[in-house]
Structures are given as C-alpha cells and as structure tokens.
Length: 190
Picture 1 (tube, rainbow, N blue to C red):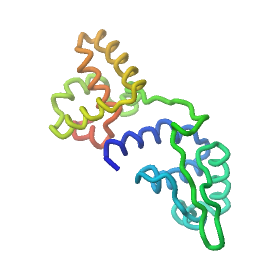
Picture 2 (cartoon, rainbow, N blue to C red):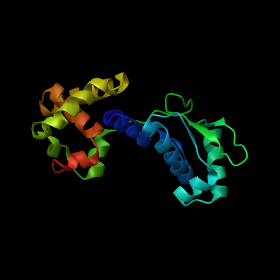
Picture 3 (tube, rainbow, N blue to C red):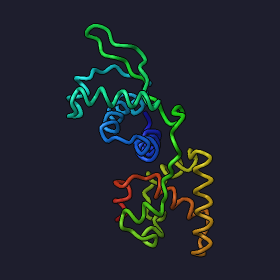
Picture 4 (tube, helix red, strand yellow):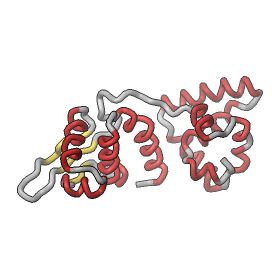
C-alpha cells in the first residue's frame, strides 16, 4: 500500500474508528485486524482466537467477547466460519462501510494545544519543508476528501483573515498540521 494512502487510513483509524469503539480490548483487537487487512490492502484475514490472544496478551474469553462486540457494532463480519482446526475468516469493515460510525474530525487547533506548540511556531513551516515533504504536501492536498478540503479551506480563510496572511498558504499549513505525522513534524522542531 502506498505510504500516503496508509497514512490517510491511519488517521481515519485513530480519529474515527477507534473513538467509536468503547472498550480498550475491542480497540486492541481491531488494531490487530486492521494490520492484517486494511493496512496491507486486504479485505479479510483468517486468524484464531489463540493467535489473537498471543498477539494482544488478552485471554481467549476476552478475545471472544471483543469479537462479538465488534460484530454486533457492525465493525467486523465473519466472512467464513471456522471448521475443525481452521480459524474463522473475518472481514474488517472501514468507515465508509460502518453505518453507525459518527464523523469525528481532526482539529488542527486541538493538535497544536496537545503538542504544546502555539500557532506562531508553525508560521513559516512551508519554507522549511524538504523537497520530499513539499511533494508529499502536494499529493495530500490533491487527495483530500471533499468535505475535509472544504473544512480546512474555511479554517484557513478565517485564520488568514485574522493574521493578515494568504489563505492558500494557511491552507497548506493546515494540511501539514493535520496530515503530517508527529515524526515528520519533529524534523522541523515541532
């Protein structure tokens, strides 16, 4: 899977899917299913309760309960039932397929607060980007979902108006804040 697509899906995972899953054991289990399916471009995986228990440190009973809850919430489906000495095959659903999943959005202002950085620290970050990161920024800007682009452009206009900046530049800054991971931002002292 292309890194940009993986990163976009990872953000959806952390901002939309995991917050919709209440129990930490269910979240941990979903991460195991995610890493064997969506993260590698697959729709289904075959794995036993025992293997899941070894991977997560959870008991088999907890695994069975968590699987049942994920199925009940429409986040996971059994694609193929288990047979003698053959594990079940699970279909892992993604936000577009999960009917009851509420839309949670990643707020750049919250990200700034959580990182301990103020907005002024990000001014001029576009000038500091490496050629590789500038290319990634352009790819991300062109591949944003329509609603996310609309939301970021609105925020950029409002922030640019207050600061007397170019809305286009502010839009790109917001993409860096919301789409670049913390490791990539650390390269720029953030």
